Image (cartoon, helix red, strand yellow):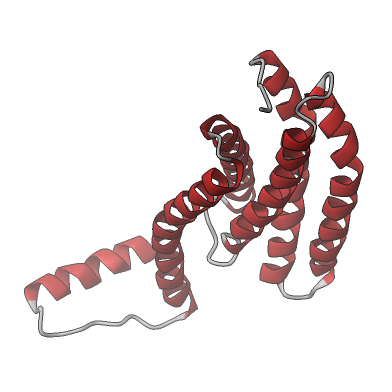
Length: 194
């Protein structure tokens, strides 16, 4: 029904471009807000990825390291996005904010892991050695972040509850990808930490 209304509005706006039509109501306001959030996500997310890639290249000076980090971040983003779409049957205006927090947490874990990996590049089995050193501290960080965002699930506002749940879901997914999958992928590709 809302799509039909928006088509009618566009038809009238084409006929009389000097007249501006603004439908009223909560659903219409939510529609416009959602459209604005989707536009922001489609512009901000690629820019954020480029900025992160530049920062990581400057930090690690390794295109291969940056590639692995970005792949994990994009996979985590995609899985979280997919979870949001499955639960909400689309994207909600507030749920997309969770995706940025997922980026932040994933970047922190990945930087810790690859920094330790670079420092212990000469150690035998450096990939496993670095994993052993950082998995527990990063687990505690992910746990405390999950507890913090999980506490939002107790909020009476449905949008805040959903935001908290999506953040927790994204943190868990990225922890599993970073410390459960990525080290084995690095070994599979014979990744050289140097």
